[in-house]
Image 1: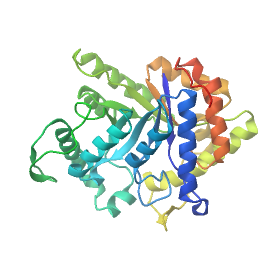
Image 2: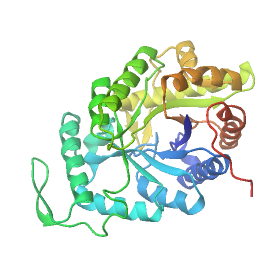
Image 3: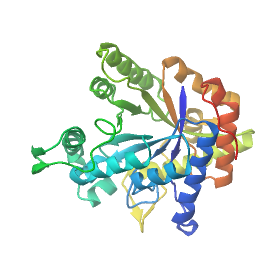
Image 4: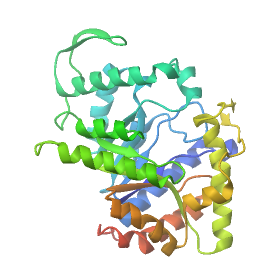
Length: 346
């Protein structure tokens, strides 16, 4: 089982400065590269300080320039917010400049606040995503593509430069519904999912759907993978664990506001609302604790056959604290699940 660090660029205090937020994310990417993590992942969100990353491909290129081997995932890019005729070329350039380390995670968008302010009603996101994905794949695989659909109509054109890798970088689909996982896997997409607040039965259903699809695929189809996303942190005492659970509870109050709640954002700042999940229940579901606790909670994922776990260490804690937690995880937890070598410290 491989591990990724989510560079979620949380920005709860505007006085901290966006430059410092992104410098912190780059420090984490450089450390993750040295410690042997498989990948870093970059979200795409606009107009708000929660998961703040309006330019994921630009950031991917910067990370590639500062690292040696780590893969870089967009996790995820919101396709309905882009014009595929422009975006396909940007993907090709990013794939070239990241030297083949890019994995393009794509999705429909989940925050009504940003989608609707950028002109995409939430009730259209699925249809727009489906057509955008078809257009993107066509542009990355063929020349002189024309289109006559609901959201795209254009005469024959060829994106330039042409992809270095046939069809462009591999694609990963963000999907939670088990039936959706089955169908996306059958189409040859890598899958990213989450069981939300530790719903184990949902996770089992998601994994079973993925396995069933893989078993039915032809031998010549790509070897797709299943990635799981979870909030995580290391804590060496009960006091430290409780402090970090409280920080996560506060973070989820902001996240839920724009994910399932009313979407109250003022001057770019997401208003913190009471988290709907009781703090004890949330604490039990999150991957926060001592090394052995982490190993015990991750073991069922390995047994289920999860290929990669994306760990979000960024939910409002001190930057140095988070770097130490990433290093602690790499040294005391990760070796139980992966044999990836670490790079020597420079």
